[in-house]
Length: 447
Image (tube, rainbow, N blue to C red; front, side):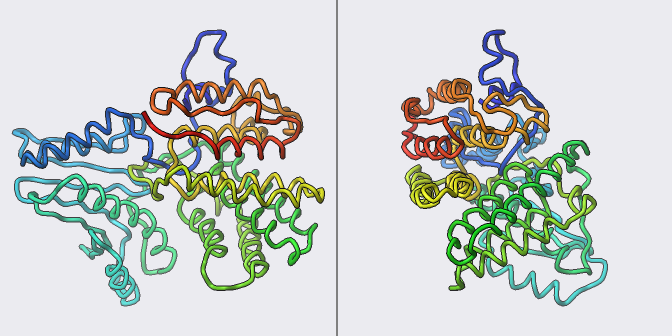
């Protein structure tokens, strides 16, 4: 469906304008592995069956086939002559996980950072973090900090491989940046494989990140910090989720953004207004970053594992419902800009916090293109859903895109359908509230 939304594949002439968002291949948002096609699920089942039949190496091959995303090339697996051993590589953000297996064991490792000189504080940190790991461990090998995963071959069932490699990959991708940031004794390693993006794209993302931060901080200044603390929190969190999805920061830039979100959700019993001030202060610091401080952390990454977990659709519905319940007061008191962002928050929170089914991510992409058409236009996309500044919405085009998503996923989600008559287009606030309301009531039962 993303091919339809972004126009990546050619269609018949009369279909090219529907939904008519032709543009470059620029990915958005966090990677989700909650979208495996039936053929991949079959390979997982085969891996489990083969393991039970003691066909360990065949099981491992089926497992890696399950993990592989042919569109991104995130996994390579090579079986050696005779089939008694093999090697593999997995991509996870800025890290490459390499491993091998034979008749005796299965092992994987990933370098985190170079440590030219021994450092007691670093080793203490790693020792403490080891206690929080279930499948993996930190190690030092020839001046390089690494994470390791090992298993004897007889117990390498698909579940153990999945959760072991996921812990290895996700922890390594986060900890390499944290360790280098926290300890001057450490140096980054193995970053040459990261795919760069054009400076023109970086420039657009940088300018819009600063624009959204300024716009939000200026809006906050127009209301009382204590009386409107709830609305301000929604504004700041929606901003964080928008930057995460649209800008796709990596490395230290992503850590700074996650720190802002953590300020609000940390269970420390502080007043919301106080947390809001801390979040605003962090956004001000982010706003002050120069191009030289931001551009290095805008790049393309391949992922094998989602860093968040899938949830039942009721959990998603509840998040959207709870946010939309708070719109009324702001709408009735003429704070329409705040009200619109509250509705964005509910849907964006789910995109940030959960591994969503692919069609929900496509609905979210459509939602964001309606809300921020000029951002996507500057990146090179055709956005027919709204006029230049988003003041006028084109309902026919939006509905056409909705129907295209439904048609594309009809086999897997036969009852997933929005009620066209329930979505309003008279204002952005009306659209946000009614569109997310329809997301809330979608039937996401799979066939």
